[in-house]
Image (tube, rainbow, N blue to C red):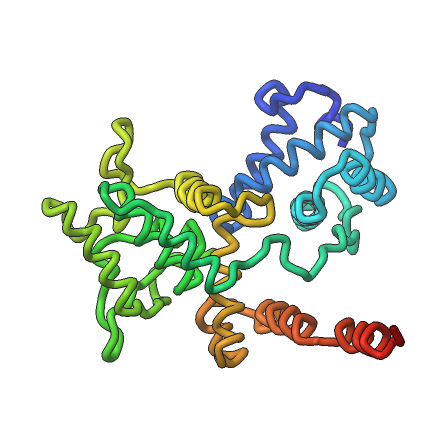
Length: 316
């Protein structure tokens, strides 16, 4: 593999052999565009590491050292996991093509905590956020509808960004929003819209009388992107600003917190684990189980019982 990494430039285009190998691998894998971007970043980082260490024939020990280097550099466990997955897939392919042995076989990624990295909001906090949003402008009416939709339907920012007006259809006796979920190619999944959420969305759509069914459900109001779909970054910014305006300024409260809130509040108010899995569109119920474990710990009154035994029974 020496000819692949002998040039330590960070620019793949200056390394013809490396660029050729990278291009062949990317063209081979059948994954989404976002995954390709993730693999691209990960492999560039890996090739850079090999070049900086002067490694011409990488071995399993080099992969392990690379993983440790990522950890020492302060990379998040989820980032390390993604980088190692890309490296494993790359060497799996090189072996299949007879180019280089799979030296990354069975190299484990980082251990990722199963607890949520973001907090959820209580019903009182959610109402505070919604009531803080000013609805005397088109932007405010839109933002209120986005927040209400996300917190009741557990939507991801990408699902909000992909939604078009025509995706509001009927499902049974309810108005539903059909969505293109994470890693999906079509809009087969849907969430039901409560009366309050549907009213909020239709109030916003009334501000866009010339909008077509194929137009985005939530459109940008900025001059540069007027009437174009909101980006995931813009949606995250809208939610974060609403949280700040309501007094909830924490790194652990983000747009994803609304999704966590939907799952948690559904369970707290009598929803089953299976219903919550369907609401959040988890492919694996073990992912939904994280919410249940969190609630079980929250309902554990051990500390209160111990405190009562000590302090309420002590003599004056």
